[in-house]
Image 1 (tube, rainbow, N blue to C red):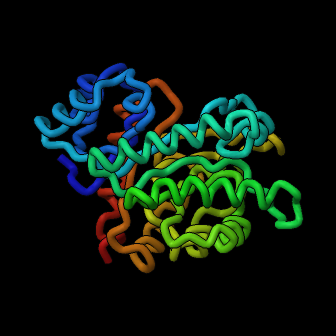
Image 2: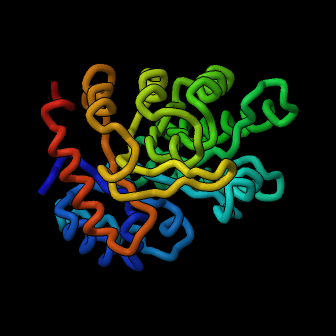
Length: 277
């Protein structure tokens, strides 16, 4: 098994803790980034999941929470509905964050990531202070339990995300860097962005994509190594600036998830010498 890699639990589309363990094992991996909300909602048994992971010799590398009402149909719908931005879902999402923080602490998770939602690219936007304050509030909820918060890259350029991090002004807030999302949202070159954001990166998603030819539409997620991420250059940045950073495979498209995750693991192994230096 590959011990230094994790896989996103939601990528495997499991219906139960048992199925999650079986599919992680089929990927030849021993660590996961865990989607917390099925446990928070009671759809899954917390005790059952923890016991099954322990029996299988698997560990939880980090957690992830989703926010209510997200609509990924188009770039415009996710801009309007994603993350902490919508007023209608803010109270529900804050309550979910409080419950997820308690859950994460109970099961020993020290990092939780989420999509904060569209952060305006200019600080003069009247929405800017509101979304910044909401991120601070959620970060403080997790920090009170000793948990760091990772903001997933996506709808911001590296420059605008750096500005946002400065405005948030919390040591407990970092970046979950997803190179494919930079391409999917057309927010810049992943290698250049990783270089700029490296001091703030707390985890990396191994994911790949191809940019769209039509402005305003999604790019296309593809198996790692078949898209436009320059992996040798990307992993060289990891070697030079982020030695030891947790790597987590994510796959959110296609109907060959296990095969594609194994392909991503092989990609990382092929570049192991570059990553280690």
